[in-house]
Length: 220
Image (cartoon, rainbow, N blue to C red; front, side, top):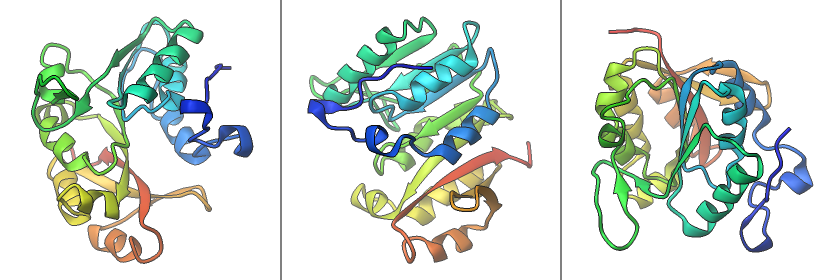
């Protein structure tokens, strides 16, 4: 039910015009795990595919915090939120990291700082091109305080290594906050409870990336 400008400079980065859908199983997982009134976070919102859907699903009493660092993508994101007249979306043109900076270039924000006063978050979707480890470090307090928080994130071996970290470190950090990790099998449309070793055995051997779903089954 949403309208969208599809891409930057005429491109359709999500291939919605040709494929007709984008990450359908991941979309269904997010839909099932948020409800009206929830507060959710879209890290690496791109042009707003997930932001628009989450804004619809959390309703007028909910809130979507949408972060995008790329200026061109952020411009399209802004247009898409305005096009659909969502009043429950806050757009943040900053890179999410482990520290907050205020340089003249791309500014960074740690979620611990951003959500210092409003830290009740139900779900985080994260796709930030290898910067996930720094983002996790910068949201440590947020993850500790929210015992029912869920997270859907990309695990991209090459991008993590290009950013100076690795998949092993990323998975270990996630586990430290009491999360169980589920591999998202798009073909079978199943969530598979996996160990770090099982994930690392499959990626990057079969593919260079996958999406994983994380939820706290052993709450502190």
